[in-house]
Length: 337
Length: 241
Image (tube, rainbow over all chains, first blue to last red; front, top):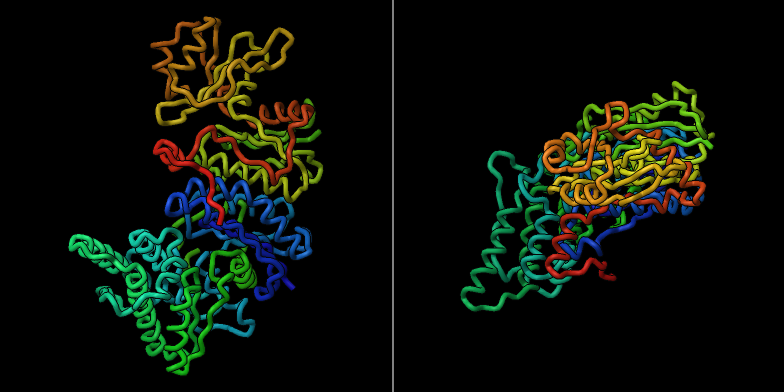
């Protein structure tokens, strides 16, 4: 039995968790900073870094208390070391290193996106590679082939904005506020998704890459055009139409990859994967093709440390150990070491 | 009392282990500012040289600011992690106070200078009184150099400058400072964790040790986003959700 204390601080959640054998979550504590960043309409890296350093010990202590364990019980200390915001990442990395060092425990650095994918292992204890996974979050949009534990083949990624970024920017321009994902989803519930025709961007050579900046600009242009013409913009219709455009692209890319790779299992992960309309659209598309669909509970989709503990377990079993010189790598690529 | 002290507030990274009046070991580098990669390996190297059993430590001391925001957080997170894991208290020591303490016993006043960018310096003014007690004339602050020079020239008594701000402000000091001044030499003019540990011992006796979980660095400055928000007439209170 391998007990892992995992720490995550790559963006605006300070999180710690205790996970056993990569699958069983004993605790999953998340201290979100959303209220303070709401004042600024988005995550302010310096403020996020300051909040992390204030809260990190309490969050770790709480994770141990909830798991009813002590640091001495842990077999591994794991931490997200990238990708993410460098200031926030450094807090978690320095803290994790110091704890591992003082307690003489092995240290395992974890890739944040790998963590998101591995959230599926927690939700579905029997799920094992290979499968396809669509990772959609505030900072990332990746279509990934999970070949084996710790082995990833990136089929496509965003060439500009991440899906979550597009939600945030569109929410701001419609006047819905921050964070954009839940606000757009809420507004879209009472809107007509067919009211406004928005583009589905195609990206040049790579058939699985994503682009959301064109869609975002189309929303802004639409708002400007309507305002110039003295017409009222219906925010709910616009949110619903925008959301449909995002869903269409995600479903299209995902299902094309399912067909090309003859996959029988398709998973989603990341903060944006908690969007109900994305979940149900991909679930329906999978069902229509007889493909098994996996999606973690929303608490495992948002940034959390349990998923880092899950990913760390497989890295640890594969022999990964990090040194006391482990650094934060803000632009760490998936599959890189 | 045995203390592990850490200072990564500026260009220098420094760690030391002090037991009462004995410096068991100190490791200081002023090379590249890659504290995230060097600080814990330095602690590890020092600890193994002196065969330190971390469980014999009574407290962790850390340069608590001002300084480089990122540097302060690397030191603070390291200190907080050690404090949490070893279940011992943490003592935050103002960075510039510890810098001044490097010059223990001098009769001149001591003025540490750190480059704070935005045309300011993190500074303060200190002296050792006739009974050798450490006296804070002007506490740690972020000021334009002219303003601290004004304070120094006010009494006109001699002063020693030190810190990684000296190379940045030397020319300006030579042009404007009227009081007799000198610059501390290499062995004493940068952050040294042993000085942080010395002051920490005094603070512990004064009851200033705290739970590692409660500790946060003192940046002496808001973030740029907060500053701009205040300038625009906004408030910094978090909305309740």
